[in-house]
Amino acid sequence: MEDSIRFEKCIDFYYGIYRKNILGKKVSIKLGIYPSYIDGIGFGVYENELNNNTSTFEIPLSRLIKAYVGLIGKEQMLCIDYLSDTIVSNNRALLALPGIQNVNKWIELIDKTKNIYDFEKKREQQVQIEKKNEQNRIAIEKEQKAEKFYQDCYSFHIKQDTPVYEFFSEKNKIAAIYIDGDKSLNFIKIDGYAQEEKAGVITYNNIHYFDKAGNISYVTDIKGDYSSYGGSMTGGNFSKLATVGGGLLFGIMGMAMGAALTYKPAYQEETKTTFTIDSDIKKIDDRSVMLNFYSEMKKQYIDIELPQDIYNFLQTYIPEKKYSIVEEFEKKTFVNQSVDINENAVCMKSLTEREDSIIDEKKSLSVEEFKIKVEKLKIMKEAGLLSDEKFEEEQANLLLLL
Image (cartoon, rainbow, N blue to C red; front, side, top):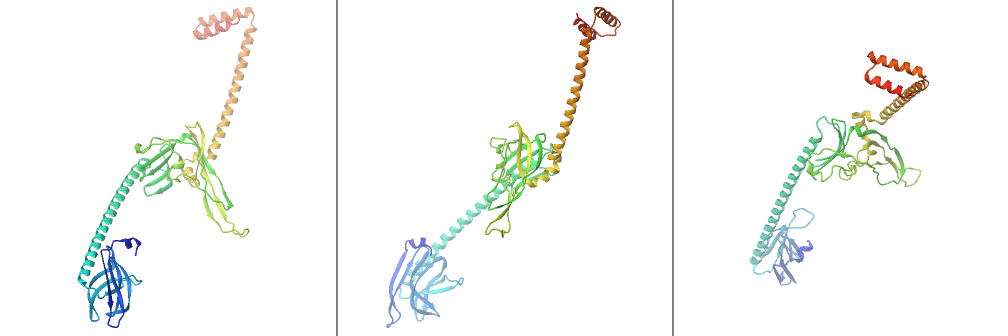
């Protein structure tokens, strides 16, 4: 029996001496009644006869069946029918306490105590049932609230045909990347239970390239994990602005319960090597995808590391941002720009040489040649062969030679 009930206050207690017959020895008979159990010293009963010796007993009221006046052998005595605490389930046993005077008094007291105990237990059970029902009601309400919040946020961001890659997903929780109509990368984290929604976006124009990174290695006794993130993203759209908590920016490291967008290398236990006794060889797969983008906040290009299996997702929906394609395009652009610069340099050189020739020609004009050119200029102006602007321009050139 639990130690706590041993300190219960005794309701009533009986002590007496009993002798089975004139020649029998005297034995003690005891009965103690407590709020949740009875104990004492009595005889066990087998085939309607008392055992040879007495034994102590301690019976929880939860296992007491009834107390009554019974005829054992040829003598009436207090009998206690109960479920014994044995390996056999629900094994009934019988105790007898002979020699007690006014037996009905003790039976009534045991019945009253048992009734009070049963009533309190039922009330306690009812309280527990009501408490459990209330907990279930709260849990259902919480679940419904979480589901509604999640569905509202999810449907705001992701439509039926929206390309989406999930970093983490469980009931009413998700961390993912989706591609919108402008082909921008949108990072979202939704937690229906915490009523939390976070979002960030890397616009399509700011995406520079993506490519595979990392490798597989084998090491001895390597433990731990690895994660990497740098830079920041601009804030994305929110369906519930009240849940943002004062900021439109968020870090990938905190996307979903400590690990949603954090890349962790996969550790795989391999067979122990035979070359070194008791040495563990572990396979470390730290392959990932590197995404390079322009950060509006940092005003520079930044790399972020994403899980390796997002590579096919990016290659499917923004293949033109694959590193090899971007690199080839940038090479062609550089070559074209170089050609344009060379061509412009040649043109400028030709123009400069022509202007120098004109200046040299003007500087070499004699007075007679100058007069002739002035007369020609007047005639062309009067004949309408020169506009006013062109006449003034040519006139200014001639004045430089004065």
